[in-house]
Image (cartoon, rainbow, N blue to C red; front, top):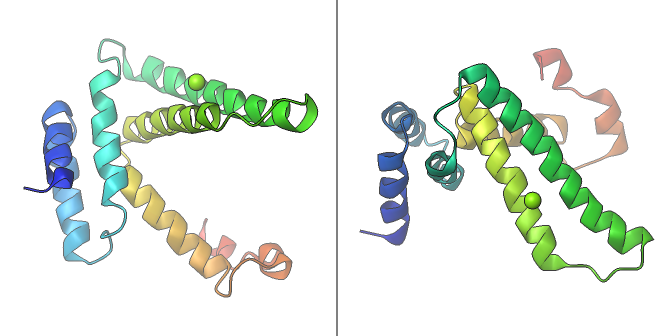
Amino acid sequence: MSRWNDSLGTALAASPQGPKIVRRVLQRVAERKAMDTLAFTTYQLSTARTDRADVPPRDRIANHAMGLAGETGELVDAIKKRLFHGHDLDRTKVRDEIGDVLWYLARLAADFDLDLGACAEANVEKLRRRYPEGFSEAASVARVDAQEGS
Ligand SMILES: [Mg+2]
């Protein structure tokens, strides 16, 4: 069994959402949509191990939303110190804060029963519609995907 499969199995075993997400992942794979975003799903499942299970859903959502904002602030602060305070860029700090942001983002998605891999896929598809030839200011203004509810 590959290392990836091992980590997926461990993550699934630790996640109360595992079976439901597995069905969705298998459906996405069958539809040939998910091949390059399964790592997001695996990561999201692994985050359940270190989340609190003893708080009601409303408090979980608040905790994850506030945590996401707080960790984003820590990431931006590291960049601010580089740009405006004369600090060296601390790449380890930036990496760690991006990881913290990702953890809260994954848990917030789970709060809304959203698969992080599916979120990534939907974003890629939205940006393909918006910027079929890559980013341009004209395409940004036109936002052709906006009429579709994005
Ligand atoms: Mg942090």
